[in-house]
Structure formats: structure tokens, C-alpha cells
Length: 254
Image (cartoon, rainbow, N blue to C red; front, side, top):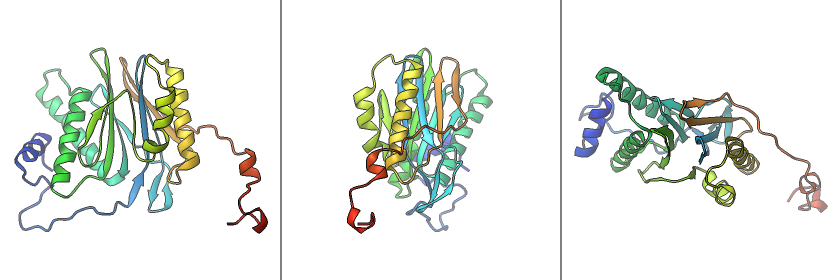
């Protein structure tokens, strides 16, 4: 596998960076991801950044894997969450491990900041897109470094930006309106958690590629941490659920 420095150098020069590939090897492009994850939602709050994602790995339309962890820590400051193809996210994790190894080998006491990792991921995703062989992931990078919270995102074609709150996948359509309405600066940890729970609950109701098993993670001055998955409370006794009007004359079918 190429090192991160070689990957970035190749990205700048336009060369191929695939592991162990020679000029004679055929090009293999991922055009239909197999095992995928859905939305990642994150926001800044008073003490840092908080992130949430469910643990479902969908095999096409089958809810095949129920304990895929899609939020990881890297370095001493950063959280990385991903939706999309899980094998591509495993490749991203290999790159992040290489960054950690390079930092350790230099042994100067300096590790990559969250913003540096965000920039690195954006360049790599843009390079793969330019080679018509994208990594099928939207990434959320969050962290806390030198007294400042950072939150940024990049998609599979390298479009990247920073914001006070972000969402990927179906969260762009269903969680962002909730965040725009209820997020405020200097939220407490409990308020941030409650808002993320509301977003993930809505996604569980409306997104058929998610389950009610959520991983929460945070990055503060104490460092990044990822909690064990928990179940978010739900409510199914609404009258429209119990007694739907649609198809009432046909036994509930359309």
C-alpha cells in the first residue's frame, strides 16, 4: 500500500495510487457499493463536538449487519464518521492508521490536527473522483485541538466545507431542518445529546436503511471518545399508526 505522503504526492501529480497496481493491471472501479451505512449527524456544542450514527450495514435492501461501527477515533484529537460503502471506509481507516504511524515515526510530539485530517481526506477523495474511481463515502471529521472545536465534512467527489452542524445521507433531508431550527451556540452536552437523539429518532422513523441502535461520540479537551451503541426511545402509538386512514376500506392496503 502506498504511504499517505505518496498518496498525496500522486494526487498532486495525477498518478495512480492504488495499492500494488502496475500499468498492465486492469482498472477496477466500484460502481455499486454492496454493504452500506446511512446518515452521520454531528454538531458543535459548548465543550466540543458530538457525533451520532446508527450501526446498520445494509446488504442492498437487506438489513444484514446490525453492529457496524461507523465512527472511529484517530490521532489524539479527531473523530471520523462515514456513510456509504463500508469496505471503502475500511480503506479510509487504513489511511488514517498510516497517518498515525508516520506521526509516531517522526517522533516530534506533533500529531495531525482535525483540520489537517479533514484537508487530507478531501484531497484523497477528490483525487479518487478525478481518476473516475471514487471512494463511496461521505465523511464527517470532528475534533478539538488547541482549545477550539472543529467540524467539517467532505463527500465522495471531494466537496468539503466546515459548519456548526452537518449531516450526511438521508440526514441532509431529514436531520438538517431539525438542526437548523433547534441548534444554538454554546449548547450544553445534555442539550446537544437530546438534539442528536431527536435527529436519529426521526431518521429511524423515516429512513428504511437505519435501525434504532445508535453510536454517540464526542471530542472535547479531554480527547475523542466513542460510546457503546444505545437504543433511542421511540413512540409507535400515534393514532395514525394504530388506525391508518389510507386503505381503510381494503383492509389497510392501498
